[in-house]
Amino acid sequence: MPVTKGWGRNMVGNVRRRAALLALAVAYAVAAGGAPASAVTAVGDLTLHVGPKTAFKYTPPSSPTLTQKINSGDGCNRSFAESPDLMHVFASAPEGATLGRFQGKIGVCFQEVRPSARSGRVDGDRSEALTLQLGSDPSLAGKKVQSADLRVEGRGTLTVTEYLDNSLIGTTTLDSATATPQGPAPLDDNYIVTVDPGAVFNRLVLTAGPTSFYGLVGGRQGSGDSVFHLTTTSGTLQPGDTAPPVENGGVTATLTFVTGDHPINYDLTLFTSPDGTHNVVLSKDADPSERFTMTIDWGPEPFCDFSHGLCPHTQLDPDNGGPQPPADAQLCGPTEPNATVPWCISDQHYSIIQGNPQQVRLVETYSGFGDPRWSR
Image 1 (cartoon, rainbow, N blue to C red):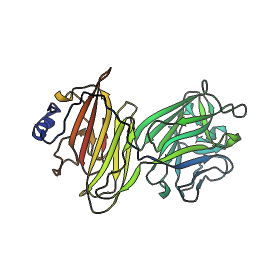
Image 2: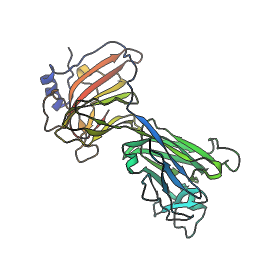
Image 3: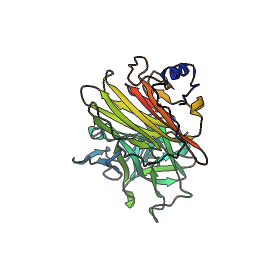
Image 4: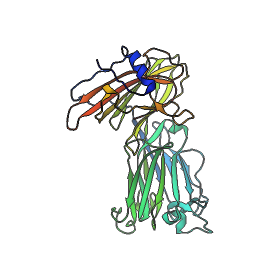
């Protein structure tokens, strides 16, 4: 049975000592079988209506509708009510700016003395930006945005950048020179921007290109509301339970609560960075004494030789952006306590997928505690 070697100075000795514990096998066959069911569940839409009664609205499952209103009137220094906290909306520019609204459009105010058309748009020549961040109302606990349909009005190029917390998820671009408007005048400069990066997100940043400007609308002149399609990647586990698998971009992750004495809440999110890196992010309210396993099927990858240690390492960030830096994931025994490494590899196997080109598939099981991020 081949054993992976050459995984760095800290890894080689571990591999040799753990050879009897690891399930490292090569299967010369095409991987088969459908993807497991996902734990991602749609939980309704959050909408933005811009007009005389500008507001975000969200109807949680089996609950009354929540409405977050903006302070009345056109002008600068606009703000949405603090409760219910459905969405944070704020403006920015190099020399300072406030949130503006003008004639059914939301944008950036930059040193305006009185309301004007510029108060209701994002201006590229002034490097303005409009940010929308999913709020923290209890009804939104564990929820993220799966996709969005933004109603905008303007001309030129518009870029919408999607983030999950501080991680860049993707970008979506609109160019009025090639895009189809919603209809004839007065909708001939209104567009729908469909934001669907293929992974969940919770923050959007709108910027315009040179000589370009756009305002965020919704309902104005019959354009329809902007819609944020919400989903949840969270759940509750009892000791001994295994969570439903979560899949994104060909990667599947499955969490098991191994030891503990009370239920825990968790959130498991998968996304692919713009550079192609796959990421698995886990957060939960468990104690450090409670142990878990995480099995990650990384899906097909370009061929590399695992038997000679010539494949890239999975990177483990033990506290997902905290003070501990990411490092190569390390091996451990399947039941051995590991006080120095919060998560370690207890099982690992790979298969070669025949074809043109040839590919390889890696499946790893980790044992540990804490709220990490795996990247590969």
